[in-house]
Length: 177
Ligand SMILES: [Zn+2]
Image 1 (cartoon, rainbow, N blue to C red):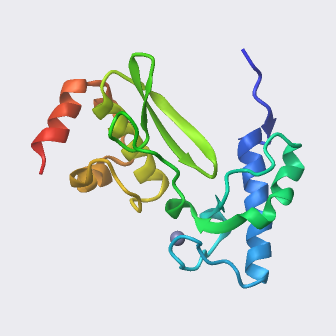
Image 2 (tube, rainbow, N blue to C red):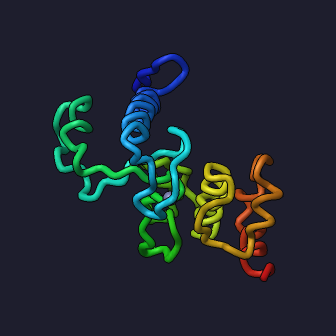
């Protein structure tokens, strides 16, 4: 198994993302440019910042540390929740793709993808993506199952074990309007 590179208690890519966002946030703020490229509203702290790549990485493959600075003209500040990068593909759901015979749930933001497991049904995968996104963005997110908003709110700090039961998930998807 690969040993994960850790910096403090953060994985390497998390530490890198945090450093980039703190530095860029201060730069944007000092230039009065800490406004979201998507919604136009103020970005109030670095934790809200994500980077909207106008053209996807123009300098892909270059040394990691310098890549960002070489690409700086191409990057606009955006709120994390405004910059979710998801396609609705074969599944018809946000953040759900086919992986072999299973449905893979994922949430893409900050030009990184968070993988949320493989599921037997696409409903399960779509609900996992919803719950994870809902928790990450404190409910400020486009959902696959909009009618479950208050259910998600109620479940947000529970363990989501019901996701393993495809029949239960089906019931939730179909029976609540
Ligand atoms: Zn925004």
